[in-house]
Every structure is written in structure tokens, then in C-alpha cells.
Length: 156
Image (cartoon, rainbow, N blue to C red; front, side, top):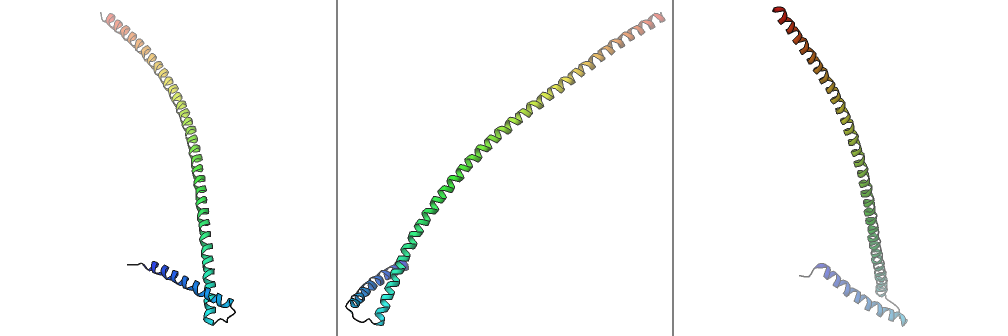
């Protein structure tokens, strides 16, 4: 089964060959000075239009090729620019992350030092409280022993 586009192309080729042959015959007839009939003039007009379409088609195809190349080159340029921008952004982001990591580590170190100072302060206060309790216990024991000795001597 032959597709319709092949038939159309074949018909166009047959038509073009016929038109070339007919127009050449008419041009030769015109060159001999013979008068042209209306049908022959129409064939020449048709040949002129066919040539015009052919040139337009060729020009359009050329422009399309140029546009395709321009688009391809522009896309390459845009892709390169995008990749360059992405590399720059990635570098900026990594630099910013390093800066933030450094700042965070510095803050953590400061917080740790502050916390250590507070724990040392609490430890000192706790030791002072323990010394006071020890003194209180020592005096309480002393007073209790003295009172017990007094009671024992009084009861004897």
C-alpha cells in the first residue's frame, strides 16, 4: 500500500516535469515570434508562480535552518550561563554554610563555656553549704554531748 504523501510527491514531480516541458515549448514559440494563446499564457504564469514558490520554499528552508542554528546556539549559551550561575550559587551556598557552621560552633563553644562557669559556681555554692552543714553538725554534736554529759552528771 502506497501512502498518500508518496502519491502527492509523485504527482508533483510529474506535474513539474510537464510544466517544465510545456513552458520550454511556449518560450521557444515566443522566441520565434508566434502569437500565444490564452492557455499558453496561463501555463507561463503558472510556471512563474511555481518558480516563485520554489524560491520562497528554498528561502524559507534556509531561514529555518538559520533559525534552528541560532536557537541551538542560544540554547547552548543559555545552558552554559545557567550552569555557570548554578556553580556560582553552589559556591556561594557552600561558603555561606561554612560561615554559618563556624558561627554555630563559636556559639556552641560560648554556651558550653558559660554552662561550665555556672556549674563551677553551683559547685562552689554547694561546697559552702556542705561546710556550713558540717559546722552545724559539729556544733550540734558538741552541744548534744555537752547536754548529755550535764544530764548524766546531774542525775548522778
